[in-house]
Amino acid sequence: MSERVVSADWLADRLDEVRVVDVRDAWEFDALGHVPGAVNVPFDSFRADAHAAESGTGEGQGMLPGANVFAQLMGEAGITSEDDVVAYDDHHGVFAARLLVTAELYGHPPERLHLLDGDFSAWQLAHETTDETPDPEPAAYETGEPASSPLVDMAAVAAAVDSEAVIVDTREDWEYGEAHIPGAVRLDWRELVDDESRGLKPRAEMEAILDERGITRDSRVVLYCNTARRISHTYVVLRHLGYEDLAFYEGSLTEWEGAGREVERG
Image 1 (cartoon, rainbow, N blue to C red):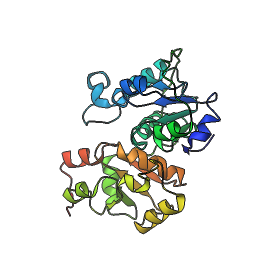
Image 2 (tube, one colour):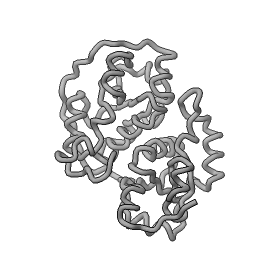
Image 3 (cartoon, one colour):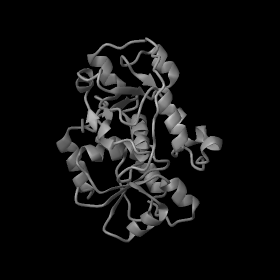
Image 4 (tube, rainbow, N blue to C red):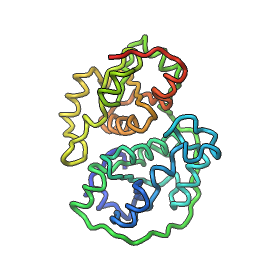
C-alpha cells in the first residue's frame, strides 16, 4: 500500500487490513459516530504543549510531542509501527495529516501512512458509521529515526533563502503579508482543497496551481507555516503528487521570528 491520500471507497475495501485513526475531539468521536473500527487519538493529545513537562519540547505551540509520548499514545490505541494507518478528521484533513507526519518523523514507514481524502464527511456520505466504543489491545509502538528525514532546522532554511530552493509559506494571505521568510512564495494549504467535497482538487488543477507558483517537482521545496500543522497537509499532498525533494521546517515562522531572523512584509 503506497497511496498517500486514499478515498473512502479505498478504505471501505481495506477496513480489515488497516488501522483507522480518528483525530477529532473525543466528544465528536463518541456522539457523532466514526468509521467502524477506528480508534480515537485527538489532535490535542499529540501537541507538544499538551505534554511540555513530559517531553521537554513544548517551546512552540503545536510542535512535536516527543517520541516517548507519541509511542505511548499510539501503543494505547493498539497501533504498531508496522501497521498501515489511515487517519481522518473533520477539517479537510489538516489535523489528520499532522498525525501522519508526526508518525513519519518518528520512523513509521511513510508508505504505510494514508490520509482519508474528503475527511470524515466523505465516509459519512458513502458508508455506514458506528457509535460503538472500541477496546483496542495495547501494542508496542517503536519509534526511531526515519530512513530519510525531511526535517530541516533554522540554519538550513536560512541557507535555502539564497539558493535555488523554493521556500513555501502555507498560511493565509494576511499572515503572509504581515511577515514571511525572505523570498518565500505563498501557497495557502487550502488552495489545494475543494471546499465542496472537502477533499483534494483534481490532480491537474493542483499541478497548475503549483506550477504557477514555481513549486515544481525538480525543485528543492522548503515548507513552513506557524507551528507546522498546515505544512503537514501540504507535505502529504506533495508526496502524493510525487514530489521527492521536500524539506519540512518544524520550527516554522514561530521559531524564525523568535530568533530575530529577518522577515519580509507585504
